[in-house]
Amino acid sequence: MTTFADRVAGAAAAVRELFPETPLQENPYLSRKFGARVLLKREDLTPVRSYKIRGAFNFFRKALATGKPAELFVCASAGNHAQGFAYVCRHFGRKGVVFMPVTTPQQKIDKTRLFGGEFVEIRLVGDFFDECYRAAIDFAAESGGEMVPPFDHKDIIEGQATVALEIAGQMPDGSQPDIVMLPVGGGGLAAGVTRYLSAGDAGTRFFFCEPGGAPSLKESLAAGRRVKLAGVDNFVDGAAVAEIGREPFRYLKDFPAESVRLVPENRLCATMIEMLNVEGVVLEPAGALAIDALKDFPKKEIRGRTVVCVVSGGNFDFERLPDVKERALRFEGLKKYFIIRFPQRPGALRDFLEMLGPDDDIARFEYLKKSARNFGSVLIGIETKERRNFDRLTAGFEAHGVQYQDITDNETLANFIV
Image 1: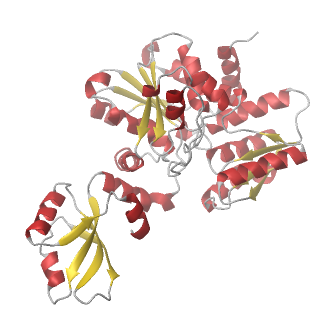
Image 2: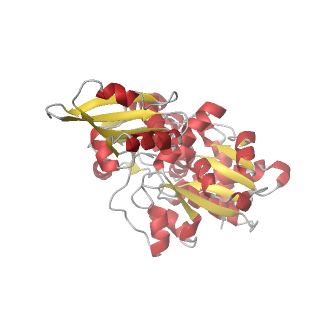
């Protein structure tokens, strides 16, 4: 009977048909910043710019090896799994149907169609992924097609574990990582990597990185069973999963809940902008999770350690860039939104503008209520270069009796009117 390591080795050898090993690169910038030896496993450099192609390829390879494969393969995905699936369909010359929500950005639809070519049909169904997934399940049952799950299958996990096999062979001087940081959505990648690297009992510590708005693994580990979240924040779309996969959780259930780092979405945006501006690396939100989570370590805990961060994907839609920059500025305290009551008299706006410093810039100005006789409410967005400038500004508001409300961190109100 073959071992898990043997099966992963077979998957790794086979996937070389598609692409060479992705690099494990030491990043001098992050190493200096955190006082550790930070290595990035660049899964954003696969042909589909994510690790998802590995699991999809291994699933197809094993299905075709049975001798009686299905005539049609089916998947439901609005992102990286769809693109990996499509690429593999074309590679094996097999027909596939991809179900995507109607709300899927056109860029992702076009890329999936590009990778699959004439072998893939795309069907847009439902406004949300759950509707789309149910439609895919029903179609597979009716057509006799085979569902290719994004994470909840042993063959998918084995395929994703090839990331770990490559890391083990790429470590400088044959050393072992002290810490491995793994992004988590459905858990297929984390399950495969931890099982493979734990087999050597090298003392490597694993930390799992989830979006703050989708803590399915952390909640499940705390409860000792799989927990389905009532709702998730979909900003980190590559990892916003309401329930960790059944098969992945079998591999991960013995880890403590404290091993999961929850990453605030706005802080994650700051990391994405930082990596783009400083390193020229384009990351999708899920792809930046492992790097961002380094910020939660006390410096003394990782100083001098060798840390591997798995960069899971780089499929970033640049139409989202303004939103990412906005979130990053708000997290860093460089942009705030105020509702201010202006007296309806000549010179009131000029008096306000004189309170601004040389580094303060008005990015938004909008009257919310124009019919009041004595006062008018105004939404004002202000950007500045140093966060301490807002302390000076609000002190000026207080000194001059300006009636204001800072709504920057009021998500409900800010999302409604900003």
